[in-house]
Image (tube, rainbow, N blue to C red; front, top):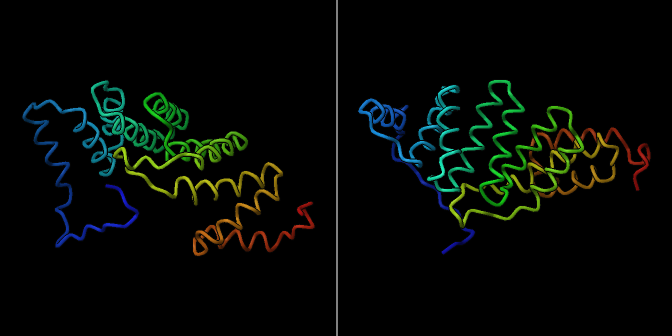
Length: 208
């Protein structure tokens, strides 16, 4: 049964630092083979611990494992992209994200991440396409995804506000900002953009 109510898990005390990573390390030391699911979660623990090179190898193995659950494989691609971006390899990060598109229906988080990488590397028109695509994605949480609704709303709208302006689509940029004022008025970038638009009246850019 799925509903839109929120459940918050309140721990009585903090978990010991590195607990899960230590469990996987112990299994590794015993020579126990990792299941496809364990590869995914071990890779995430390594990434969280800042062990980027090892995380990259483990997450790549999880993403490519044909025995793995497709949801975990898609999420492994996203985490793998984070590893590669951290290492200064944006093209490798894009390759990891594009791999996920062969594993299942596109996820908004993946498409928003593709758009962000495109924007950072100056491919503004392509970035706008992927942000627009992210907004059309559906919620995949019923399939077991860790879905973040911001990746098909606030995040792509923030990206499109910038991309449209740089592409000369200034009316569209303002429209995205107006939507964000109702969705996330306290977001620091929305507040900053309000000042920007106030300094650039519509009659200066040919807007309506």
